Image (cartoon, rainbow, N blue to C red; front, side, top):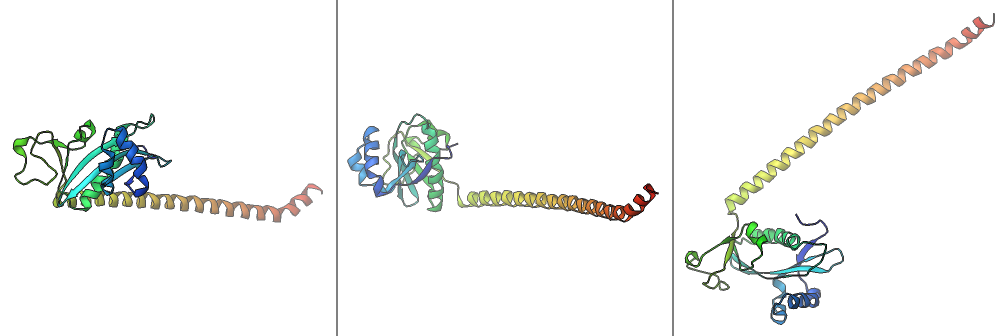
Length: 211
């Protein structure tokens, strides 16, 4: 899980200087990548420092995850940055109807996040322009519409159940509060009546004491 202080967002023109430094430090062609700034997404710390950047090229219903660059902060694990940006990219690709995301990034994180190796012999007949018919490709298959609907329905059912449980718990607390409030009111009334009774009897008690 990514630390809560990491923020993932689309890169802007204001990020270009920092990105060029990060790309150069990562051995990537900064000048060439600068022309594709709009494809990049970044992860920043609370001070706005860019810790991670990765590109997402979209072509039809296919996408390419490319040109990953990482800084080396001592307090943040690289996979925490990847988790932050991948969470964003999954939502983005789902909303854009992307069926398959390709990559040749070799970090283990992408393997355990659902990317599967695809041999040359199993490459589709028709490929997006950014995919060369060569080894080293990994793909992430997005859930189809039916699966997405099922996931949404499950999440909604879970949310509804949680809401019902919270409502029942709240109602139970209200009932307990009412019982306590009624008990306190009854006790207060009894004490008040007792005080009034005692107050009416005090003169008589004093007269009996001083006879």
